Image 1 (cartoon, rainbow, N blue to C red):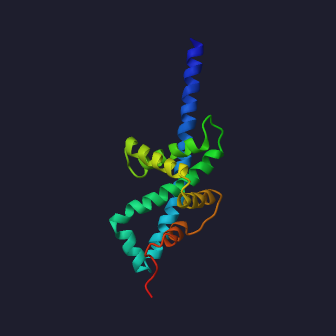
Image 2: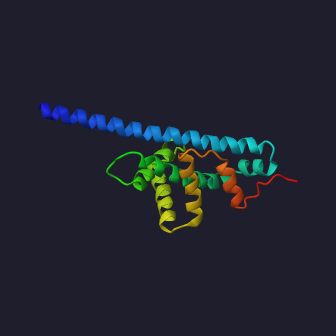
Image 3: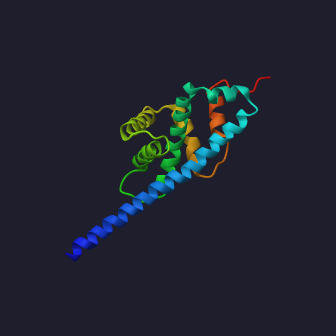
Length: 163
């Protein structure tokens, strides 16, 4: 009987630890992504083309895709810091799903589809994906640049200020 209680307590502690791990990853990523979105907002105040791009609801999917690829690198780096019986890539997918459900309010099935799509991009050896993911990895290491703005410029999105 006491063994049963000890096992339940251990399971409860492990669950609490996993929840804290997810929460910590989510909150640290939120700070990074919020900084990137704030940078875009500030730049849009003086850049009409960027303001138009950000206001156009058709471009929200572009920004979400950029965000997820960026977070893929961030979360994979975060996951490498912890010793769990799964790979960092698998845990990064879990973090992406958690992120989408918590901050983007997607349901579990939609979030899984997005995570699978990211994994497929990685498996296809997509150079653009690698580049954006590397920016997320660098952000985890402490780099603080205008990554989202730079990436949009590199993609040749019409966000340059009018002359």
